Length: 163
Ligand code: COA
Image (tube, rainbow, N blue to C red; front, side, top):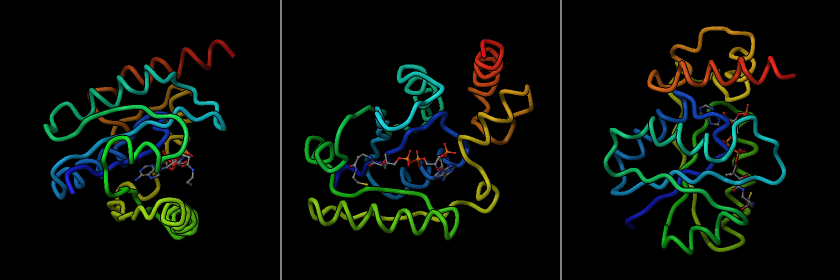
């Protein structure tokens, strides 16, 4: 297996996501971070903003590629020739939802999912928490990668002002 895929919405990428990506990159030869252009969600950051934030966050990881996809994850996996999905688990709540998704992907195409337990310092963290705190001008240090912290904070403050 040469490529594993770590999919998500990444609105925006957090230190928790980066923790999973870093550990996956140390475990597998090649990791594709795949951003879903999700018709069912209304992300705050545009696709190009989210891709750029992810790219900057993983720039130091030479075996990580960043891409976007639409449609079924298993179709994208087939297109990429990828064999395994990587997901992070923060809690029992994640487990229930992830177990369903893993079973669906296995049912659809026989594609397996492997899980990394979130590091304890990130077990509380989510993109919506970052969006909420950032929209009130709160500090995001330790929540999003430091190289994108100022940009995420400024963008969230702007979005809040326009509301
Ligand atoms: N650290 C920090 N946050 C984490 C995290 C971690 N380790 N793991 C999950 N999260 C959070 C995210 O921040 C996000 O938080 P938010 O809801 O507050 O914004 C939330 O968990 C879920 O985000 P994400 O991990 O990006 O997953 P998702 O639910 O947006 O996307 C897909 C899931 C893309 C894998 C799934 O919807 C998919 O495959 N869709 C394609 C269609 C398809 O194939 N469907 C059939 C199979 S289900």
